Amino acid sequence: MAELAGLAEVAAICGVSKRSALSYTKRPDFPEPLDRLASGPVWRRADVEAWAKAHLPLPPGRPSTQSERRK
View 1 (cartoon, rainbow, N blue to C red):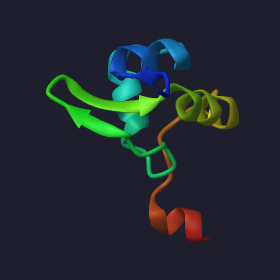
View 2: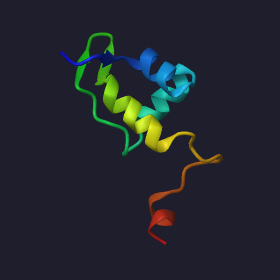
View 3: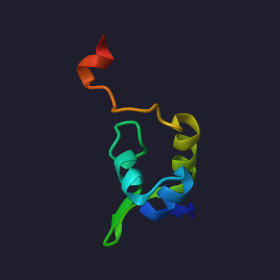
């Protein structure tokens, strides 16, 4: 069975607060949850670790909008 990660584990893996981790999970490039439980979504720990390795640290400032990314 895959090792799972809830929001608290995502925060720990990424080295951020749970609030920041929640915003990361809403990014289109963040892995999809494996399932959703009563306590919230869960991800494969390996998927979250791979995402963090590829994307962190995030550049400072606000994320660009879709139209800015197309330029």
